[in-house]
Length: 117
Picture (cartoon, one colour):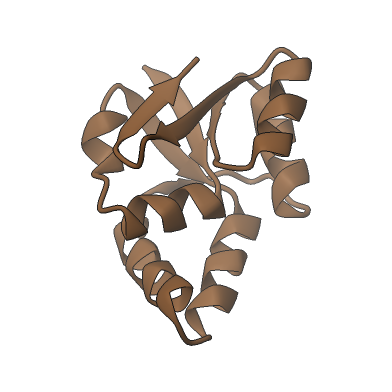
């Protein structure tokens, strides 16, 4: 089974656009890094659409396995990519960094499809 680690902006976008990422990524075992959970918690404390989406995302990802990779979110996601995990992110710059080290990415296209390369 393939492994994927989810980024904050991927989760927020998936919730906002009502994308069932669990079914679209069914062939992957999904993981989170602690920095992403921290970012979601900070966003959830605020107000507005992102805060609501962050609270929903936190509920959805409660059952996901944590990866013990410390550091800031982008650095942790890059480290996970080096270990062979797909990284699900909407961040174009991060996707390019991951691809440049030979990593694999997943992202949302047309607000409904998740594409992995």
